[in-house]
Image (cartoon, rainbow, N blue to C red; front, side, top):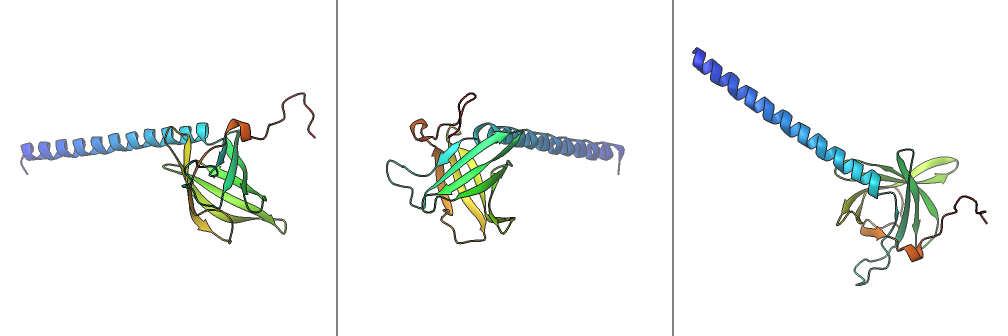
Length: 163
């Protein structure tokens, strides 16, 4: 190999390595932005009930998520049984992983693992069940949106007694 060929091969290798590093850096920034958006927007009260055009079929669910100390968790209720299921959210890219559990004989048992992704103006969730261990009233695929303010349960404020 001549010195000129050696120089050209080295130049091509450096260009390739630089472009790979640039792509990895860009992907890490995109991932970080998606996870930050999930932390900001997922902690809300969501439902799939009440579509004006009736395009969302039953079963209907309500997903009430809260952000506390950097963790997103909450409750899921179904229209049919009104039982509250525990929910933990692991933000990820491109979609967050939701684990729905129930307390059975003193142990937390995972019922459903779903993936949710924000879309629209970050005011819609696309819900898709990835794995289920039970015959539940939880839809396999659905779209969720924030519960209207008038339908939300008021949260107790400081200085008010809980009844």
